[in-house]
Image (tube, rainbow, N blue to C red):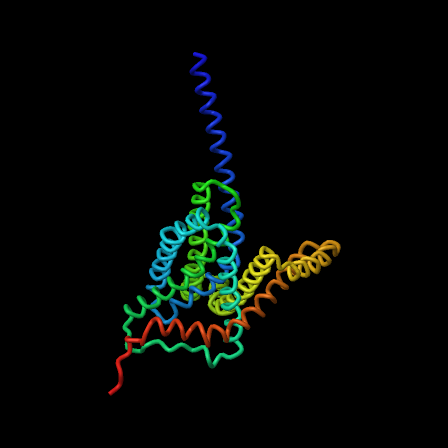
Length: 323
């Protein structure tokens, strides 16, 4: 009997330990997901453009295809790669984070550059593509873009986890991957169908207030999408700049980080709104760093990196030569 009681006591202790570890995993997943928020906002802002010009009935299926591709990117390719990195080459984490941060800075700065020079932003899609091929091309392009953003999300999440066992790291990364994918593409699905919902209310609403609300949704969606895009660009610059500043501190270049911290600390001493102004100051200064780095990278990408990529890809074969 005493042996049975001892066994039950051991089982209870193991259950309590497992519950504690699960709580730790959930907390780590929430922390890691929060760290990746800046990339998530931009992902939500970018994805709706891939359904523009396609039939409304295909919008949700296209978003679903992109979401499945995003999950494949995160769970099948990036999660094992992150675990291997964490196990065999943890010293590479900071350089990879900084590389991803530089990419975010470039993307954010390029969007601002395109806003200032709109005549240079129009990409012409082949007119010979039918609907099915155009959809396939859009989905493939979206999944490729998602891979880069997902890689940055998983790297940020890995850096935020801290010291844990490999299986806890795997669970946290899987939770972050699934949670962020559901949040991003759920939001995208709502955004791309919002105007259809508003139009239906305009046409079928029984009350004048309902029809007015529907018209407000239809008229307001362009502003909503523009606002989300602006927030996403700012978030990319903030996250990218912050990653670069922290990376420099990791390698011993602490001056920039100390200056930003000191200015933010002074703003944090303001009464009542100190916490908010302190955070906003730090985010703004990190964003300015990101913007400067991003603008510096634009000529490098255009003059060096893009030609190298084009050289390795070889000549395009999709458009036949004119006689």
